[in-house]
Length: 449
Image (cartoon, rainbow, N blue to C red; front, top):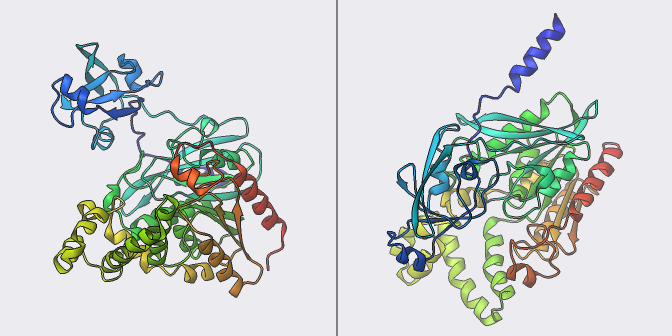
């Protein structure tokens, strides 16, 4: 029967064979040098356990807060690379721990438990699916309203960092472990279908590692996620939006230029060339931190030379040091291990090649660019430039605004200085959710031009 065929086709389309990864379920931090010396631990070995999460691996094994984990599965426990190694363990496999507790060595073990799934609530359900990008499976997480009918959809594109967005929305506080969580919860709880995708090598996603992934390779996962969102049976294909946060504001217009999009909202992003943005960052963040204007000028000059050589002339760190030995100490500081901000230089070069304005012009949809008033990471000029670019070709469709009491992570700080001094430690300000949802509804109520 036709309807059976349709149901089967939909089931196959969204069937998920990507395994859930396991979770130790305990915050970890390196041992201090003093503690390592007192326990005669080799350099780099030993991880201090925080409070274990009930029901997950560490708690089931009997690990307690303050335990010093020295071995896992017979392997020295070292903070560097530990999380990446844990990702290789198979869910359900036996995990053994050797810990130091009150001067005694204790052997513990438990099966590796699956990372908990978001149960949703009475207003939305959560589905774990995947998309294929360059031969690897990427975890997608979809929230669906429980209300019948078709609903507007939102593709969320996260920022730069390789952090997992696989968490329970209802309990997300918007801290460093649940970035953007209150916003995603508000969207899901307000009858929007939402789609988010884990970066390659993060969470359940295959691929990676993060530091080798270039901009264009990462871009593909967001395009594949958009395709999957458009295929959802309860999504209104005429009302699909994109919300890009931070680096997501650079990926967002590229995706929107390729797929029909009702509107794009970005927060805390660049709108000019990446070189221009970095020049402002080198100068301005020093001023926010308390440098004098003389010091800021002194740092901007060699910084501009180094960034131009690396990003525009595409010189490696070693090539820059060889041709400009006077810059060698700064080159090592800018590009430790040949990376910039933990990422291959090719990522940043491709980003610098991106003509943001070209893609904003190709985004045939209204655009809202928002910057938090205490966001010391981004600048008003970028958000105004985005709106001006759109309005030049589609008058009235570009908007920009500054959101009070909100920093780069939506934390409630009044000034950039307060945010910098307390970065990642603020209380989440969810005012942006109302601004964005009100804007979405305004756009949906406006006839298409």
